[in-house]
Image 1 (cartoon, rainbow, N blue to C red):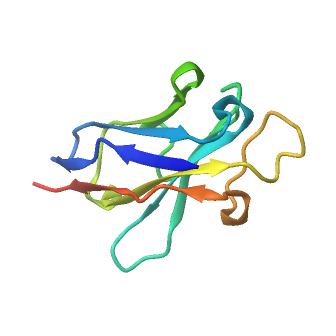
Image 2: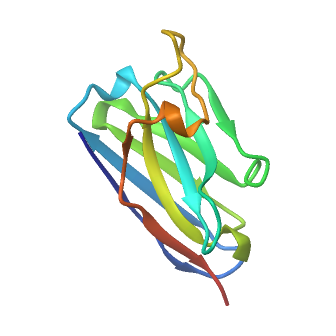
Length: 128
């Protein structure tokens, strides 16, 4: 299984970025998906997840109302649209396959242990 993120970069506060993640080696619409991030000197933090049908999406309080997660099952792609970015959003963003913990239900979970496959990450820097 390969998980590859793209779309990171440098943006000013208040700006927007769109992250993408492509997944290969599994049936994409069989799994939920998540975004995590790790800021410098901090622990990895869950950001958002989306169920396999996209009927359920969840967000960390820190990004709710500013970030939007979506998926394109036909193209095995996950997207994170990030608006109104703040300096505290600076981090390496990781895409992860949420293939555990659903017990057959169309949901997604935020726990690290529920994610078997991870990408290498893409850097997002929010600064003047």
